[in-house]
Image (cartoon, one colour):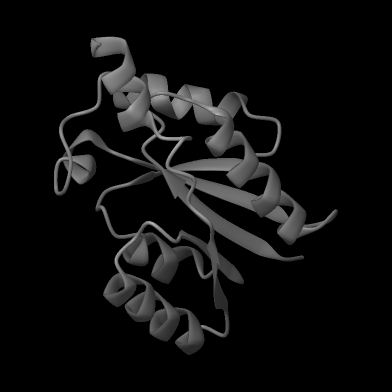
Length: 136
């Protein structure tokens, strides 16, 4: 059974989130599991403003997604503490993330016998862009 770990803020849910989860679940395979980390408010605020939706709301939204097998709290912006505990076969990363952070994740995943898959980032599918459009 293949375990895939993917993580999100999930403040405003959009098609990009769904596609990322769908692809992550497909990579896990029929018998595999997709574990989704939802960043706590404190984890988000390491790099971004506090989410509009509460952690509990965002956690529940992730749990409602048909592609998701398990939702866990992610206490840091970096997925690495959860990855070291869960030891997934695959860590999904976004091309929008810092290359240095992705390389660090690759090293951790190699140590546990896994790999990192970097998925494209589509700026048009962005919670920040949606929030900006609402403000306008």
